[in-house]
Length: 453
Image 1 (spheres, rainbow, N blue to C red):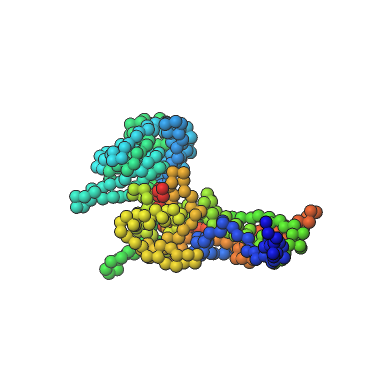
Image 2: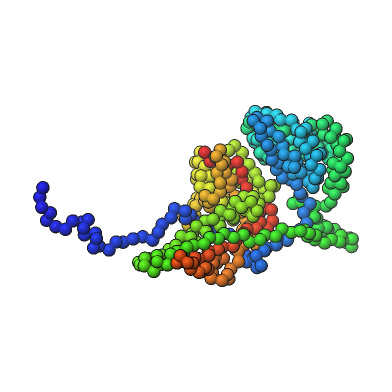
């Protein structure tokens, strides 16, 4: 073994000055939703959305309970059927729920035949069905799809009619059906339900437009001194109010750390920077997933559609685009965008790309597909894709916040010094206030049951 001729590198490092990076974190994402949302000031912490009076109520989805292979509808969920909206007799609803019979269908099976008597109410507990009508040129016309929680034939509560389309199972389906005879027997022994249905039928004739809003009487194309109709625009008596939600945390830093270990990087500054990043990530998550104001939960049920097969196809995105007069952007999980790209590749379609703050994204029909990993993907590999019209001027989706806060460091985000405790620990209260509002129902659309596996 030879003697060392020079200073070792390990010893030399003790005298060398290290080059360090600022603290990094994997949680930071492009946060496209926070970038594209037009932010509106909510003075007083509340934003009220005034709309024209609408008569459409109760066109919702029902929920079920499962014990083994047996599936039952939750009685209270039957009020999601339009004719039962507002009916609160729990005993009658429980009796009605017991009358539903569980049935299984295979792909391609006919559940209801177009033109036949509409003699049953159908609740879709699991699976996907297609609505098909006979077209004008001897071909079948696709009228859309329904899936878990949707219902068909609720008009039976108002009287027997006929099916206007054929309902076929697209996948293995489990449905609950209530026939006309058991329903008739229930009505005969439930005068309260019968009176509720009669009252609903009397109010069903109120004039309304195709969006369910109270109609405005107008005259057009007349000649001479025709008698013009009188009218007024009716408003909702109880418009929805959005209260600002908040995300908060208390950041603690020991004074010894701030005093002795503040070079070359300010410890308090770096702690606050990473805390603000995490708070902004949580803010975007809340804007999507909060059950009160989150966009995934506030899309109107008439603006929700299902994929034709499973993965998102160009046809599916075209269906989503066609439901609003203007779409500024799509928002989807990166895996959903990858699944859409695979479908485009299979069809030989290659969408263009565009640069946006935070990266390069795909364009479909001139509308950017923005990635957002806050949109959940279920264990079965299902997710949703959103389409949004943005801004108050276009009656779209808006973000709500309050700026001008004390100790504000970013718009709508404040950092307040909260003192030093007996352990010499400094505290900072970090707060952001936020919410989101959908000004009219067709501003936000949802493509559901999107397979990404």
